[in-house]
Amino acid sequence: MDIRSVGVVGAGQMGNGIAHVFALAGYDVILTDVNEAALSNAVATIDRNIERQVSRGKVTADDKAAAMARITTTLKLAEVGPCDLIIEAATERETVKQAIFDDLLPHLKPHTILTSNTSSISITRLASRTDRPEKFMGFHFMNPVPVMQLVELIRGIATDQETWDAMHAVVRKLGKTAASAEDFPAFIVNRILMPMINEAVYTLYEGVGSVKSIDESMKLGANHPMGPLELADFIGLDTCLAIMNVLHDGLADTKYRPCPLLTKYVEAGWLGRKTQRGFYDYR
Ligand code: CAA
Image (tube, rainbow, N blue to C red):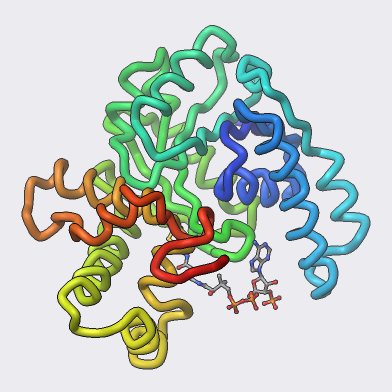
């Protein structure tokens, strides 16, 4: 199946990164959000990030201009409906995602593939509410999207082979590498990564180490590019907590219980870099 037009729902840090890589790979992209400021910020961010690639000689100025010209924005969700592929990249809350798919359904073409960039929520459950569970799957990018090589592809219980193969072809066209995952809570990357981050928060909570010593230990002692607390701030502490709750509820095992300190930070509105405060102070 020939995918040319891509609708991205949600212009936050994942949505703008996804629009960025699709536009550079030659797809026509429509980016939508409920908020005009989010859309204009996203376009400015994409421009800045592609410019960074130009300045490092990874992208030509002509390729940048062509990519920027392929991106349009709209406040009307219905306008992404006719795209060949739709990628939902909204907040990590199931009710929000369900409402988006409900609103999109009347506007879809029969061949449209629906995907969600969810980092943990059941693909099978999201798909079951749509009119096309066989054309629905998980399409999970890593942050920062333009830099990270991996995309997780998650097969819902009803996803058909044609959709699965088409999305593998899309990942190849993006120049990225796909990892195939079955639909269980948090899939592969976050099943492994989030308990490590949560354990780092417990290590802080129990006074075993300071923020600095925990992060330096993992950077210098385990060769991680970022320490786990710095990475949590980068991902967003609300997203980390939401994923831990999906693991805890979905696998019913106390080993996934979110650290009370993580919960407290989220309750305080200290969500990491996006609110200028998390385990580190960015103000
Ligand atoms: N757009 C385009 N390019 C970018 C970029 C962006 N947003 N951010 C960084 N880059 C590029 C830089 O230009 C640089 O390019 P060159 O190699 O050509 O010089 C390269 O990426 C490295 O960037 P920096 O030199 O600025 O910084 P760094 O070396 O410290 O790397 C990092 C930054 C890539 C973010 C690195 O710290 C890293 O890999 N961190 C871990 C990220 C990670 O684990 N992500 C996964 C999170 S989990 C997730 O996303 C799943 C989920 O569901 C929660």
